[in-house]
Image 1 (cartoon, rainbow, N blue to C red):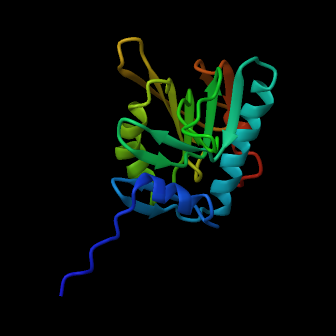
Image 2: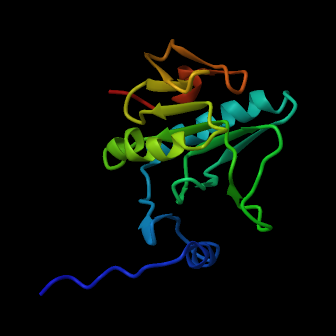
Length: 190
């Protein structure tokens, strides 16, 4: 016997449920996907990234750093929760609830073994459809390593990677610096 078909939800139905849910889920093409609970290490790294960026961006005009914002990609229909998002300029929201961001400048994903391929592949493909997105960071929770993709004027993405606690990422899209020592504060490596 074939499995029963998955229920189809409209975006409006998803948002109504999501706004009352105790857990987070993402949405694409009528399907809802649970956001898995992350490890303590993942939470520390994501919190450190948000804290470091917030401390630097509060001094700059028109910068807003959000932890776990829900974003919407109108061209592809994806609703997702990156770990950290930064907006340069006035934030634009999908509706009057002001809980779904449309114009992130920088998105950060702290990947896990379960999400790494998706974060690098299909999810980034969706994110690239955001005209406002200028920079994307992938951060490992298991070793001091980060990967950076910066949108070029011709639409291509320039890739670079850093590793080691002495390394620093320059984030040109938001005029910030991200030392890996700060990203991994409180984390012990074997």
